[in-house]
Structure formats: structure tokens, C-alpha cells
Length: 171
Image (cartoon, rainbow, N blue to C red; front, side):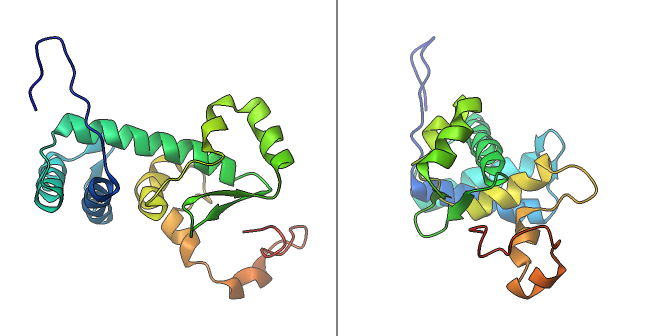
């Protein structure tokens, strides 16, 4: 990918490229290869190779770093939305679900950066959560997306009596 001096070449990521990249990142995340300030060098090499082999496209470490910033932004904004009452994740359509437009309108009044997420499709949300949830989690009760996904409905009996059942809360 070369560009005339002073010009930047932008890479358009496809769903297939995202899937190939995220597969490598999840695998290496699970192996503990996600350092405090980013991925270990061999992870970038594995990701470049996987995207090249599966998608027949040349990418660089900078392309991966940029795409990871996009995933991080999605995670940060969507997870904040999902932590609010009245919101859920529509796994079939890969986007937010909400109880009503009124719930959405109240949320975006104070969170303008979220406005484009009302109908935004974000594929691979489970992989994004796996990778980024531990980066953002803090506090004694912090959990990863994978840990939350493993909770079964049978555990509802442990919930606080002040909280509505999961079904009623649209989880």
C-alpha cells in the first residue's frame, strides 16, 4: 500500500476482514497476548497473515491499530448504553434494541457521541466484548463479556429483590 508523498491511503474494512482480524485477536487475547499498551508484536504478524490469507488483502500494523481504535470506540459507547435501563442487544440484527424512542431520546440528550448508534449495525459484538471488556472493566465486581454471557437464567434467584426479573428488564 503505497501512496504519493503526503497522501494517506485509507483501507476500507469488510465484514470478512473484520472477522479474520477479530478471530486472531480473540485467540491471542485468550492466550494472554494483550499487553497493557496494546498487542504483543507477534499478534500483529499473525493478524496480518490471517487477513491476507483469508481476504487476499495487504494490511499493515497501522491498519490493525486503527481498526482496533474503532472497535474500542464501539465498545466504549455501546457498553455505556447497554448499562442503562431500557436498552439491550439485538443479536439477530447486530444492533442496539431499546424499549422506546423516548428512552433513546433521553439518553442521547446527554450523550451526543452515541447518536449514530441508534440504528448502527456492529457485527462481531461478542468478539469485541471479549477483547475490550477486560480493558475497561474496573472494580471488584467487574466482569468480562464472556463471563456475563455464561450466566444462565437459572441464576436469576440470586438477584437482588429490588431488581426486576431479566425478562421484564428486556435483557
